[in-house]
Image (tube, rainbow, N blue to C red; front, side, top):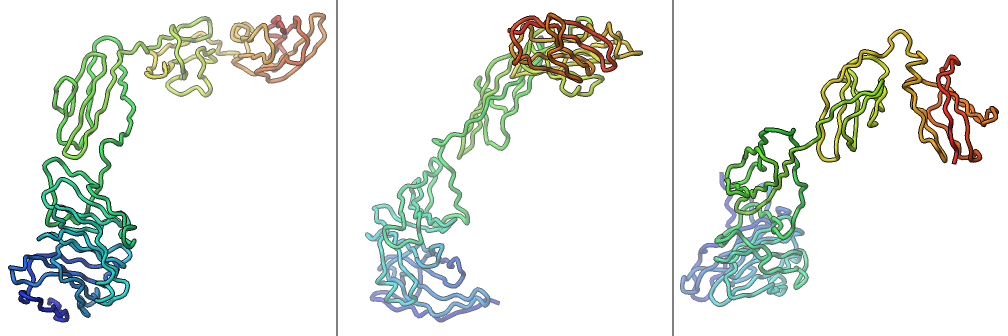
Length: 409
């Protein structure tokens, strides 16, 4: 059942009868107060003004109503902290945005706290509190006003005229929606990387899809579909648009030469072209650490390599290796061909690239050992005098695999 609260006594003003014409109503954020407005010309013989009352959200009872203003008023809203009341005076020579301080719940005190926030020739209408900001509608204009600090008294409330430009040919008058959403203007840009679509050489089709959710699309050649099928390399852009936003995305299609071909030299695999990144695979599985341009095979199987030129990437066809010795991985002939030493000449580190762990001995030209290491992949000659040295590489069981001359600069 409805709750009736006939507690607000409306004073009868000169030339006015009891009653209200059109207006608005608002409840305070803390749900403890309610305000109602009414406006109309004096010739209408209707009561106008602003009433403030206490409100019990549990029972719905309105009580202790007080008269805030007898001036024709339409819009009304509370500040977020419940200390200020804002109203609009929309017609008949008095066009104001008004502020009242309602901390002291007394009609005379509230009336004496009056501050005129703004006045212009255009009619003020609806008010709306949203996200700690008060929005103000004009009659038949393409903008919204804004009170940025509605908790503050007087000029500190931060009135901002023409704060938001509405959609072309749109205006707001008698009310504002339950939510006012402010979208930054298009002068604030977000940068997106171009989309690069890599294709194999020869004939191909590429399907480009614009971002969904927009009302219309326009490609650089006038196509208005959201999807476009292309068969040629080039740069293409699409404008995605609706009433509020526009966005342009660019697509770069490149017919790429990234199609690696494996070449072989004894037990070393490489590619016929150079790339910036590599990853070798054996039987479809990643070979850990095999990210160099050259890979020395350790076992038979199907090898592939993934490569990238920094933009596009591709994977080679399978290259099958069948000639790796299967009876003895430590076969000296095989290891001698597989092991490489670099750089030479050297100033600091010397690397030993071997498919199996090896030991090393470095001797002077007269045969005296100056350095020995086991299970070594690299060693330093930084502390040695410049000259010629002999490097002996041996298997883990001591079998001599290889001897190389090392020059220390």
